Amino acid sequence: MPFFREGKPEAFKKAPTCKKGSKILISHGRMGAFIMNNTLFEAKEEEEEKKKGEGQSPLAVRMRPRSLEEFVGQKHILKEESLLQRAIRSDKISSLILYGPPGTGKTTLAYVIANSTKGVFKSLNAVTSCVADIRKIIAEARERRKISQRRTILFIDELHHFNKSQQDALMADVEDGTIILIGATVHNPYFAINSPLLSRSQVFEFKPLEEKELILIMKNALLDRERGLGNFKVKIKESALTHLAKHSQGDARRALNALEIGVLTTKPDKTQTIHFTLEAAEESIQKKVVLYDKDEDEHYNTISAFIKSMRGSDPDGALYWLAKMIVAGEDPRFIARRLVICASEDVGNADPQALILANSALQVSEFIGMPEAKIPLAQATVYIATSPKSNSSYLGIEKAITDVEKEKTLEVPKDLQVGSYKGAEKLGRGQNYLYPHDYKDHLVRQDYIPERKKYYQPSETGYEKVIKERMEKWEKVVKSEQKADTEKRNSETP
Image (cartoon, rainbow, N blue to C red; front, side):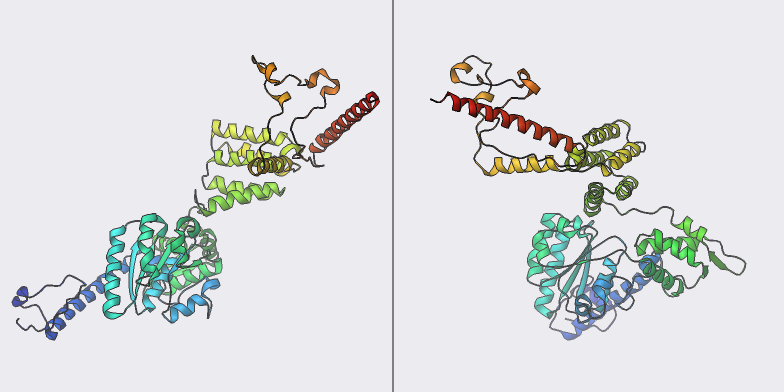
């Protein structure tokens, strides 16, 4: 085999070729050296292309922190000497699931780890990747571990987009340490990620960034000449920064994007100074984004707060959560169905009108839709929140269901069975039923259940107090009849 020096002489065409980024182990050290050099040249070209691309990237990408020292926020998990910080600094991280709202630093932290680790860092986006991509990286990781003992860290952004089989493809290699998984997701991993994969990973929740943290991030971008907006002469008002921070909802990406578009589109004065005013900030971030997903955490958390506010008799809290759902575009019928449930479960017979009003709101929502449906929804919300409360009906049916499910099923008393068909009399069914309307006060004593049970226990609240008094009156009448029957039987006994 001919000997080659650095470069690509014509004779190289006859030598073994090497795919970009791959390694060929040859016994001839010099040939191996040549191929290694070639790979390094390609890596250098890739690095230069990457830097060129970064210059055209959005500000939020260019300003992504490169180290823990540059990272802003998430002090609850990244404070000095915290478990996660120690693991990153010592390059001893285990598999991680990072979850939280957009723009809070999940992807950024993954790339901070990439910059600090001695292992090989690979990344995928679950939206555009498949099982074949995973298997390819895992196969490379196994070979790398076997030959050089180097770890492979695999970062998967938007991990929740992987289905069960795709997530299952990771489990065995995460468990045996072939790969260290870092998964990022905006959804609660306990809903979106397979339990076996969760049990093999540490879960860290990212919180929305505070306003002061967002302001610091934007100020850093304004001063940074290499990656930020430091080459522009910008005079920005504190009120403008505060406005951007407030309306970014803890999302650093949104704040930086708004800052960048404001700086780039604001016309400088004669001295080339860009005056970034409050008005410019308002134009840069047109509408506040409400953090709300239709089938995950925020969806269920918000409706939970809505119902609990009504149950707790707080109309203001209930109206706020209702407003959040309306602004986020929630289906008004979904809201109205919850109103119906709350009216029955938590108000019940303390004010039977609440259920009627809630059902009317449901019908109106289906008939007229949004935005007008917000008015009857608000009316029903306030009515339920300010109504007297009782869950006696709810507790009664829950107790009865428990008895039916766990105890012996009781037979229907023969007197209550259908007695109108041919042969019923012969079977003794329905023949001795006492018709209540034939008796005084439309009330007569008879057994409606073989064993005496007490399920409904009315409260002293609202209209239910009237119901309780009526039931107590009926009970006295029944006891009086029982006493009279007993005295009659005793007098007839010889």
